[in-house]
Length: 116
Image (tube, rainbow, N blue to C red):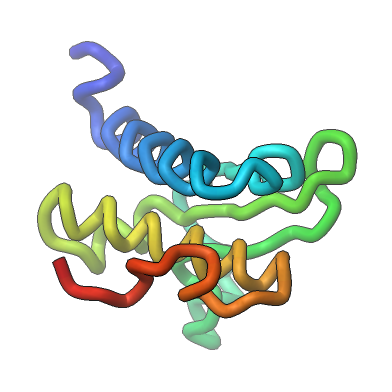
């Protein structure tokens, strides 16, 4: 089966779409932030219930970039179809970008939190 049709390939395509969408809104995102995908959050996140969809590692990326980590399995398990998964990925990225830049999520993406 071609990679783009696998579950991991599909998740990567959706994350890539959201990255490009947000990077077009503000070029500093691409300069200062990396996105990584991991299957599962650390066990401590599962125990506390915090950070089960994404995490932020400040300065841990190439050249000291901040890294947004998306946890594919927990996002997939808690979303229905493709569009809601894409929206959830986008919302997690917006929340983490807002955290990085000290802004409100609505300032990063004016459509944040609006139902489609």
